[in-house]
Length: 357
Image (cartoon, rainbow, N blue to C red; front, side, top):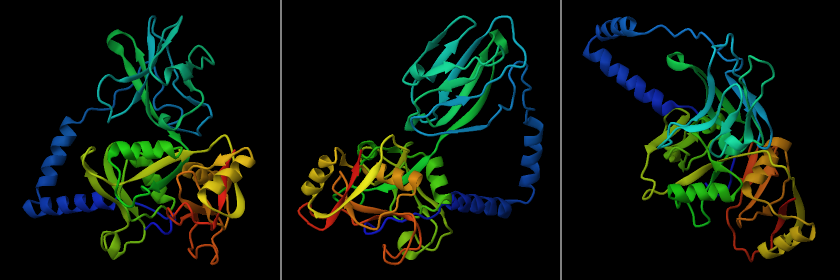
């Protein structure tokens, strides 16, 4: 599907199908199974712990930010113990090793940790405020955060989500379909001003219209692809959804990549012409710019509704064009998206240039 990149939708139909099949097997085995398991669950289920010091649920269960911006993750005390510390941690299930501590603070000072710590501080808007202020957001900052009040044996915590607003785009090697190991996919996204997408980011992209028939790596080492319009060439007539291959061997298996990017500080513009790749590079340099990366073109399309009905070179050697207002003469597809002509010969003198400055 190298010829056209168009954005459509996605679900977790694969998981739902497995779940329904499992339930059907259980029903065939015994109709009393559910009654028994429900009784056990009701007996063993513990009531949610009522927090003594922190306000729960937090003020906002989800906070939204964009790359380069600042956000505040809320954590409020309703009463104070005599002696306590506040510890902020980013929860990353796929991380191996020590937890990803951001900072630990007491009444007099705080100590930052890791890559996020230098960009973090407590807001301290008032005496009961333990909220975390994050500056200069990066793509990797999205995820789950925990605010923990440490007070001897009475430790308690609240969690919340930080969502970086952005766009997911499929990306494949110039050598063709399914060429990337996990590490190569990760590097390919970085090279195009992005990062490997998370499952949640891919799922959100599916709900917003992403339909793509090639499987790609995600940040946790699993492989998926989103389908809105089921068709025989894309896994058969299963329901629309996120099709999954599950975890794959990161060193041996090869797939495409699903990358995630957000807004940029610069802007993308088009120079008309019939350039070879090298000529397109020079055309951008004459405008004190450089050929745009794929992620930068997607960000312009997503955040600025960039619309240009002309194929243009990008820095990776691909030729693409962004369409926010679909019409017949601009690719002929009914959905908005970034169309692709793949990776033509760099000596071809047919295309303009998409520059970034």
